[in-house]
Image 1: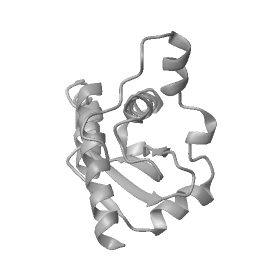
Image 2: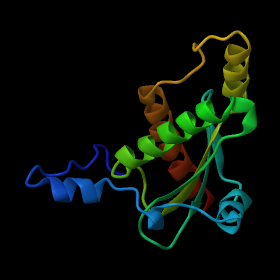
Image 3: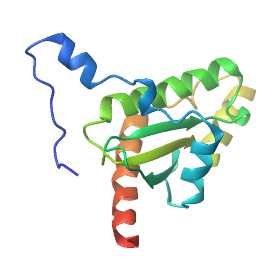
Image 4: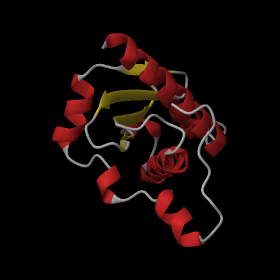
Length: 150
């Protein structure tokens, strides 16, 4: 994994947009794909996110997102999913490639979100910066664990 993320050249916007795209081939979409990642049991977590990882043969990272109903109503869940996808999209050059990732909101964080919903406060909503930092740290930790395993 590179110590510093590779930066896109500013030669043209087309190259930057393609480099940081989140095309369908970089998504985990089927239940079978999610189950394959979860079956590897390579799990890392912090207070905000839970990340499952599994090596793949594609040469690029792929992402699956799962946000449970305990995180709030559809509006809140969709916002959380957008945050998770955007953190992945912007971090593709910073995370180890050749891995499939499944990102979830941690149960601790989910309880905080649910409590803030009941109190009608928006305090529990994580920021994009928090989500991105958490994702990068967890991806690095998962890669280290994967190297130790095999």
